[in-house]
View: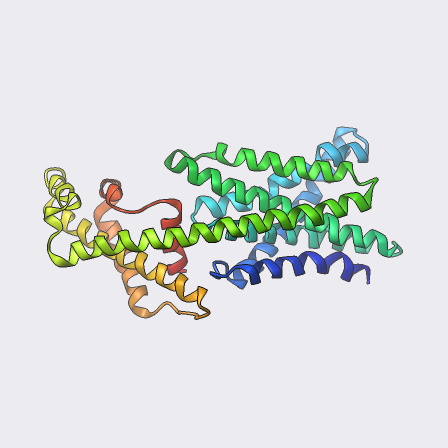
Length: 332
């Protein structure tokens, strides 16, 4: 019974987040992988905390309030940083789900250890561990993920490690504050159960509005670009004049490859947006062989164009964090 109370709530909360995602931005297999990653991080944190506690000379209570929170939140955050910087996270809603998934995996292992060590503990302890501590771990990492993605999008090309610092600070403060309230378990658990659903509700509302706005604007821009390319009127447009100016810097075949790359990129961007709209309507659209062939052609063109050519064509492409994410989503 202790194991059920300690482990089930955080997994049920994670399942609820997946169900609330109307655009189905996150796949179940990705969540399972992130829960496993969080479990692995918990193992590393267990060893790190044991070594630091032994060498620091601090009491257990002091350590759990001031040292354990930054250690554990930093380790969990590294998983999210890797996902954001490789464009695996597109919107706030999937950042929240990814972050909560990592935190849930961490909490499952941590509570599993306590189940083994405290076999005679009362049901009240497991209520606090399951509905309080476990949800806190997931919520703190989710808040970090949402803040990190938001700051990365705001900074755009200038985004560095500093974009993740505010979210990490919030996660550490939340974790530390929760540990300060451990002598008052009912208050700490109730606080987590009241605050986090409100935060997630706001994130989901904001994210759905952002997805809707991005889809509408992106469809118009991508369709206009594709019409220009296919109609033969590209040379009269700003994009065409920009390509013409590149003839003085690149060989003719490279400029032709740049135009092919622009067309493929735009076609795939439209395809990705269409898949998102179909998902919202409840239809699952598989990636067909023609689309996979376009990705293979894009990889060939990237090697032909080279890094300098890709840098030169970036002003003509929509290459925000969301735009790069949509190509990853379509190609995975």
